Figure 1 (tube, rainbow, N blue to C red):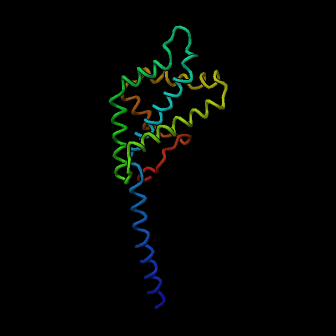
Figure 2: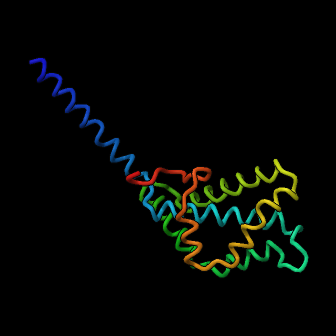
Figure 3: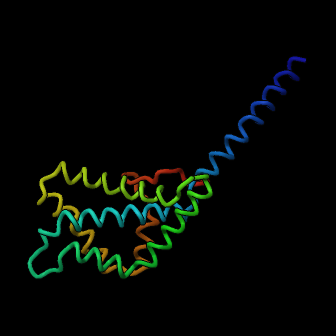
Length: 164
Protein backbone atom coordinates (compact mmCIF):
# COMPACT_ATOMS: atom_id res chain seq x y z
CA UNK A 1 0.00 0.00 0.00
CA UNK A 2 2.84 2.32 0.85
CA UNK A 3 4.49 1.74 -2.56
CA UNK A 4 1.18 2.54 -4.25
CA UNK A 5 0.97 5.88 -2.40
CA UNK A 6 4.53 6.74 -3.41
CA UNK A 7 3.72 5.86 -7.03
CA UNK A 8 0.69 8.16 -6.96
CA UNK A 9 2.83 10.98 -5.56
CA UNK A 10 5.45 10.49 -8.29
CA UNK A 11 2.74 10.40 -10.96
CA UNK A 12 1.15 13.58 -9.55
CA UNK A 13 4.53 15.32 -9.47
CA UNK A 14 5.20 14.37 -13.09
CA UNK A 15 1.77 15.59 -14.13
CA UNK A 16 2.39 18.93 -12.44
CA UNK A 17 5.88 19.22 -13.91
CA UNK A 18 4.80 18.51 -17.50
CA UNK A 19 3.01 21.85 -18.04
CA UNK A 20 5.97 23.70 -16.52
CA UNK A 21 8.37 21.91 -18.87
CA UNK A 22 6.12 22.74 -21.81
CA UNK A 23 6.01 26.40 -20.72
CA UNK A 24 9.79 26.47 -20.39
CA UNK A 25 10.10 24.89 -23.84
CA UNK A 26 7.72 27.45 -25.27
CA UNK A 27 9.94 30.30 -24.06
CA UNK A 28 13.24 28.88 -25.23
CA UNK A 29 14.86 30.07 -28.42
CA UNK A 30 15.27 27.96 -31.50
CA UNK A 31 18.77 28.10 -32.96
CA UNK A 32 17.51 30.61 -35.56
CA UNK A 33 15.95 32.82 -32.87
CA UNK A 34 19.16 32.80 -30.82
CA UNK A 35 21.13 33.72 -33.94
CA UNK A 36 18.65 36.52 -34.64
CA UNK A 37 19.09 37.96 -31.15
CA UNK A 38 22.87 37.82 -31.50
CA UNK A 39 22.64 39.60 -34.86
CA UNK A 40 20.50 42.36 -33.35
CA UNK A 41 23.02 42.68 -30.50
CA UNK A 42 25.91 42.92 -32.96
CA UNK A 43 24.08 45.50 -35.07
CA UNK A 44 23.15 47.57 -32.00
CA UNK A 45 26.71 47.48 -30.70
CA UNK A 46 28.11 48.57 -34.06
CA UNK A 47 25.74 51.55 -34.04
CA UNK A 48 26.96 52.68 -30.62
CA UNK A 49 30.59 52.17 -31.60
CA UNK A 50 30.08 54.15 -34.81
CA UNK A 51 28.38 57.01 -33.00
CA UNK A 52 30.90 57.15 -30.15
CA UNK A 53 33.99 56.77 -32.28
CA UNK A 54 33.17 58.67 -35.46
CA UNK A 55 35.33 61.58 -34.30
CA UNK A 56 38.30 59.23 -33.90
CA UNK A 57 38.27 57.76 -37.39
CA UNK A 58 41.87 57.28 -38.51
CA UNK A 59 43.04 59.74 -41.17
CA UNK A 60 42.29 58.58 -44.68
CA UNK A 61 39.59 56.13 -43.54
CA UNK A 62 35.83 56.35 -43.82
CA UNK A 63 33.99 57.95 -40.92
CA UNK A 64 33.05 55.07 -38.60
CA UNK A 65 29.41 56.04 -38.32
CA UNK A 66 29.21 56.31 -42.10
CA UNK A 67 30.83 52.86 -42.34
CA UNK A 68 28.18 51.53 -39.93
CA UNK A 69 25.41 53.12 -42.05
CA UNK A 70 26.80 51.57 -45.23
CA UNK A 71 27.08 48.19 -43.49
CA UNK A 72 23.43 48.52 -42.45
CA UNK A 73 22.30 49.53 -45.94
CA UNK A 74 24.24 46.67 -47.54
CA UNK A 75 22.67 44.15 -45.14
CA UNK A 76 19.21 45.61 -44.65
CA UNK A 77 17.52 42.43 -45.90
CA UNK A 78 19.48 40.20 -43.53
CA UNK A 79 18.72 42.34 -40.49
CA UNK A 80 15.06 42.61 -41.52
CA UNK A 81 14.93 38.80 -41.64
CA UNK A 82 16.51 38.59 -38.20
CA UNK A 83 13.94 41.06 -36.85
CA UNK A 84 11.17 39.02 -38.45
CA UNK A 85 12.48 35.90 -36.73
CA UNK A 86 12.41 37.67 -33.37
CA UNK A 87 8.93 39.07 -34.04
CA UNK A 88 7.82 35.49 -34.58
CA UNK A 89 9.40 34.43 -31.30
CA UNK A 90 7.73 37.22 -29.33
CA UNK A 91 4.37 36.51 -30.94
CA UNK A 92 4.75 32.78 -30.29
CA UNK A 93 5.47 33.42 -26.62
CA UNK A 94 2.44 35.66 -26.17
CA UNK A 95 3.89 39.15 -26.29
CA UNK A 96 1.26 41.86 -26.55
CA UNK A 97 3.63 44.08 -28.54
CA UNK A 98 6.36 42.15 -30.33
CA UNK A 99 7.74 45.28 -32.00
CA UNK A 100 8.18 46.94 -28.59
CA UNK A 101 9.99 43.81 -27.38
CA UNK A 102 12.52 44.11 -30.20
CA UNK A 103 12.96 47.82 -29.51
CA UNK A 104 13.54 47.04 -25.82
CA UNK A 105 16.08 44.39 -26.74
CA UNK A 106 17.94 46.80 -29.05
CA UNK A 107 17.88 49.48 -26.34
CA UNK A 108 19.25 47.07 -23.73
CA UNK A 109 22.11 46.04 -26.04
CA UNK A 110 22.91 49.66 -26.89
CA UNK A 111 22.77 50.65 -23.21
CA UNK A 112 25.18 47.87 -22.24
CA UNK A 113 27.88 48.90 -24.68
CA UNK A 114 27.22 52.58 -23.91
CA UNK A 115 27.89 51.78 -20.26
CA UNK A 116 31.17 50.17 -21.31
CA UNK A 117 31.99 53.34 -23.23
CA UNK A 118 31.17 55.51 -20.22
CA UNK A 119 33.54 53.48 -18.02
CA UNK A 120 36.49 53.85 -20.41
CA UNK A 121 38.39 56.78 -21.78
CA UNK A 122 37.03 57.49 -25.27
CA UNK A 123 40.35 56.73 -26.96
CA UNK A 124 40.65 53.38 -25.17
CA UNK A 125 37.05 52.45 -25.95
CA UNK A 126 37.43 53.34 -29.61
CA UNK A 127 40.80 51.63 -29.99
CA UNK A 128 39.29 48.48 -28.49
CA UNK A 129 35.97 48.44 -30.39
CA UNK A 130 36.70 50.32 -33.63
CA UNK A 131 38.04 47.20 -35.41
CA UNK A 132 34.59 45.61 -35.17
CA UNK A 133 33.15 48.13 -37.61
CA UNK A 134 36.14 47.86 -39.88
CA UNK A 135 35.84 44.04 -39.95
CA UNK A 136 32.05 44.05 -40.29
CA UNK A 137 32.11 46.50 -43.19
CA UNK A 138 33.91 43.98 -45.41
CA UNK A 139 31.89 40.93 -44.33
CA UNK A 140 29.50 39.22 -46.65
CA UNK A 141 26.12 37.83 -45.65
CA UNK A 142 27.50 34.36 -44.83
CA UNK A 143 30.21 35.84 -42.60
CA UNK A 144 27.66 37.90 -40.68
CA UNK A 145 25.43 34.86 -40.24
CA UNK A 146 28.37 32.82 -38.97
CA UNK A 147 29.27 35.60 -36.53
CA UNK A 148 25.69 35.82 -35.28
CA UNK A 149 25.47 32.03 -34.90
CA UNK A 150 28.61 31.92 -32.75
CA UNK A 151 27.72 32.17 -29.08
CA UNK A 152 30.19 33.46 -26.52
CA UNK A 153 29.84 33.03 -22.74
CA UNK A 154 30.51 36.76 -22.37
CA UNK A 155 27.50 37.53 -24.60
CA UNK A 156 24.77 35.03 -23.74
CA UNK A 157 21.37 35.23 -25.36
CA UNK A 158 18.48 36.32 -23.14
CA UNK A 159 16.59 33.00 -23.31
CA UNK A 160 17.83 29.43 -23.20
CA UNK A 161 18.24 27.65 -26.52
CA UNK A 162 15.77 24.78 -26.85
CA UNK A 163 17.36 21.41 -26.25
CA UNK A 164 20.50 22.76 -24.59
